[in-house]
Length: 184
Image (cartoon, rainbow, N blue to C red):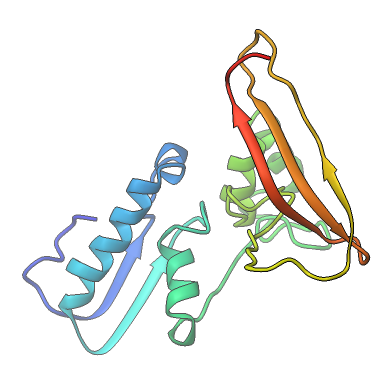
């Protein structure tokens, strides 16, 4: 946000590295403000043929690129360059060899390294569940009701006690949760 976009119309717009730090990437208010700035300031300056280029690290599924990919998916063409290719080779050895890459990322937070070099959003990489599914009614094929309780002691952790139903095809449905910081 910012720059010299206000007051000037444009046919072609380039937004480059709108997120500068990991701290911004973890801040939902900052991510929302980028989307608001894009829609309420930048987009209104566009004139036909309205071409846009967004260059950025994919920090979060909720960043400007993520929102463009989900909310305007029919008008978006994504090009994603990962430093380390699926076969283990580097995107461009002239910029960084695999040994140099390993040297750089060895002390980095894994999430930050994956976002910076592999375009893996920090809020998606390594999640047990990639998206949260909801339901209105339970299925008929429930075979068990389970409860797992992790008691809070005098430490800094919380008491957590999810109750879930297991179906005959081994899907789980959370039906209740007790969660508190109060010690047992």
